[in-house]
Image (tube, rainbow, N blue to C red; front, side, top):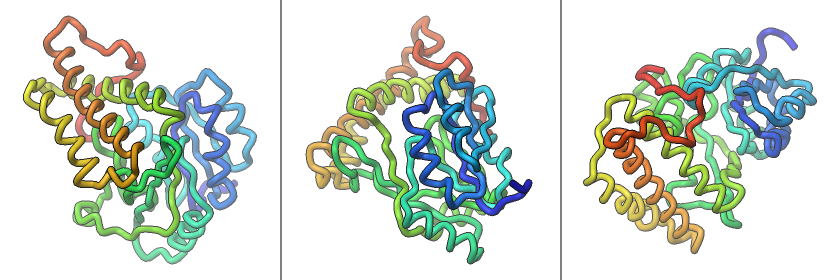
Length: 277
C-alpha cells in the first residue's frame, strides 16, 4: 500500500470482537485503507482485524471519544476520510455514493444518513434518523462536541452551521444496542462520561434542569420529532432518552455535592476533555 491513498475508513475500537468483522467488511473492498485505532482491547479485536488486507491496526490509550477520533484521522493516510464506529455498516448504495462523490471532488465534505436498528425494527423518527457529516477531506474538519456525543465540525463554520451540506444516497446502518439491557448499560456509561466532563469543566448541578429537562426530552422525541410513528419502540426510546438526560444531571449533582469524585463505572484512563480538543 502506498503512503497516500484516496479514502481511509477510520474506526476506533475497544473490545469489539463481536462486531468489528462486519464493520470492516462493509468498507474493505472500496476503501484503500481501513485505519483502526484501538485502546488496548483485551479480546480478539486485533486478531480479527489484522486478517484483512487493507487494515492498519494501531493502538493508543483512550482519553475520550473526541480525542481518539481526531487522533485516528491524523494517523490516516487518505486524502478523504470516512468515519464510522464499530457498530455501524455502510450499505452498498452508500459505498457507491461515496466513491462517486470523492471522484467528482466538488466540495470537501458530505453528510450520511444513519439508520439505527433497535427493538426489532429500523427507527426512522424521534430524531434518530438524520444526516450527519461522516465523509470529508482529511484536513477539512475535526471531531468536536461533548464526550461521548461527538460530531464532526467543518473548518468552514458557515457550512457547518447551515447544515446544508450534500447528503449521500444510501444509509449507514447503526446496530447501536444488542437489546434494551445493553441500551441501559450504555446510558449508564455515557451519562457518567458527560457528568464527569461537566464537573471537570466547572459546571454546576441544577435541580431545576434535573426535573424539567427529562420531560422536555421526552416531549421533543416522542411528539415533536414524531417518535410515536415508530410504535412501542419509539415510546421506549423516548423514555430511555429522558432517563439518560435525568442521569446526566443527577450524576453531576452527585459529583459536585457528595464525596463521590469519579463515577465508579468510568474507565480509569478517561480524562476530562478540555476545550479545543
